Image (tube, rainbow, N blue to C red; front, side):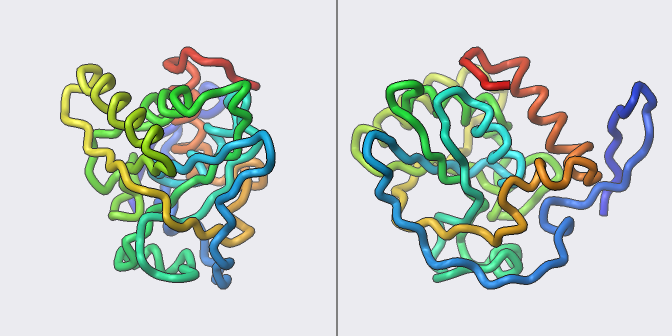
Length: 215
């Protein structure tokens, strides 16, 4: 474990924070892959940008997003578990499947959320979490989404000092993560990782994101 510092109740204290990986000791069988066909009038998108606890919390705060589901995508293993994905041998990345209303928020706008809620220049890493399961990926389902992703990546490139390493990949399958990962921040607000990593990341996002948020 590594030491990270956070400011709580106006007092700077030292917290020993584990990674998103080490925070859970539970073992459950992963669910079967989810149906990627959205409900009538809705749309789905998938993004990987580090720990899915953080990503889920961020995307669900965006106006027009109905829900974000934590899971795994981008690899070849079938029905992966959290423990298996964290061996960094499956090719899967921690991913959120975002259900949204395209009349309220566009796919292009979700790409803005993606690039303003992470550091897309760190290969196989986001904050304290390291490994290919934490790499940055934009998943697309159509040729139009792929084109929008490529344009967004090019547009955001000048905003960073280092090259953007985010992958752009087709969404072929998404496996829902174990239930204890869903809405993790809501259910575990006082977790050291949540207080020291997730919430500061969310607060930074709120300061830099120019779109509409629910909270």
